[in-house]
Amino acid sequence: MSAPTPTADPPAAGTRTLTHSRRGRSLLGTRRDWRLTRPAPILRPHPGRHWVGPLVVVASTVFIWPAFAGTAGEDGDVSFGLYIGAVSITLMAWSFVLAIRVRRLEPWFGGLDRAYRVHRWTGVLSVGAMYLHTSQIDELLDGVRGASRDLADSAEDLAGTGQTMLYILIALSVLRLMPYRWWRWTHKLLGVPFVFASFHFFTAEKPYSNTSPSGWYFNVVMLLGVAAWLWRTAGRDVFGRGVPYRVVAITSTGGHRGGGVVDVRLVPEGRPLRYRPGQFVFVRAGGGRGEPHPFSLASAPADDSVRVIVRGLGDWSSRLGGSLAVGDRVRLEGPYGQFRPLPERPGPTLWIAGGVGITPMLSAVRDAAEAGIVPHLLYAVRSEDEAIALDELRSLDHEGLLRLHLFVSADGDRMGPADLARIAEVAVGGADGLAGAHVALCGPSGLVRTMASAAHHLGARHVHHEEFDIRAGFGPDLSEEAAEVVEHWRVSR
Image 1 (cartoon, rainbow, N blue to C red):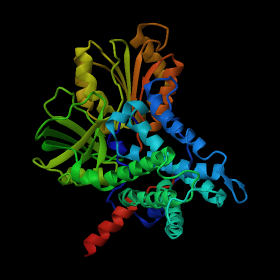
Image 2: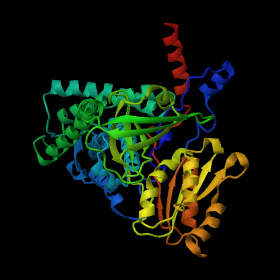
Image 3: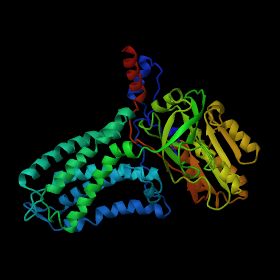
Image 4: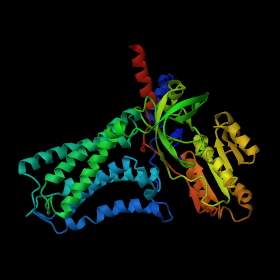
């Protein structure tokens, strides 16, 4: 999907009772749950500033090779074994740094979605590098000891324990069998094996001393990784919980398969957030200490209040309508995102949205009008009663602020590349496809990828979308079943 909307609420949970047969099917999942999808590329095809971050990560693992080149061991050259161990430490440190959501790093990676993608890749590759290190390492000849032999042996034993722990935690991350609310806490434990590995790396025998330039470099890398992990797991909850806002209005509507919709208005208790159309925030309910969830902002930057539209697609968002009340305090962390619904200069603009992915488009309507842009909006929904803010969109269309093209799959009207080509002729005003047009997409990943490919095929060079996924992996998501068990246990008490 694009910039995190309520569909970014990772677990698809509910509280309704399941029949035994349905529960059995849920536990096994569907063929789609177990299908491995091709990983999305880290780099966009057109070079730019967003290439800098990933290339720096790669460079940080390449230029450290000279520190280990030519190192001799008892059974021959051990350069690669030592080097790949250092690569594992470096990649793991990057994974923790990218997990703390540093906004200043976003442009260098192309958005938080791609920064998270690099975070996942560095984590997975660090595990592979660790396996190669442990399978190839040998005793050094004339190495420099980092600590006493007894301390180094103890650190090596801890590293072995941490390696086993790391394999288990990574397996839990890849397989979505564990409900999100519990997985989130196990994911925080990944720093423990990193601490063990860093302790081993510092105390182990190496071709350089810990006080040499190479030694100081790796010491800083390890300290940054540990500091980032501590901030991510504990520091943010105490010192970086976001900006306080107060709920001033809540509008709830019923739903069907996708759950109900909650439209929340918030006003700042102090200095408000400054954001651009298309950006998103992490919302913490429950006094700011609750679990953070990402949602796109549906309000315009010039509005006095912040608007968040939540669809009940997960355990957390399904309970939100009943747990929030006017006057409650929440905290907003952000803003994040490099999603650009509007072009830098006025010109033909097409918005493609699916379901609740309409929210960042709502945020951009006022700025579009001020820039003299009338975007063509292609909006795909299952049914009209599941469409978000449909009356509002029709009113905007009537006022001439956008051109609405609604596609309702329940009526047999499913959006496809042919529809984009047809509307492109009207939006661009010629037979050149989307050449010179700005295209922004937000919605389910399948729709975004299909329509983004179609837009590129029609000649569009400026195609903006984000694919934000807090928890990537495969296998069935058992959050609904877990929520049912917890609720049954709570009631039975």
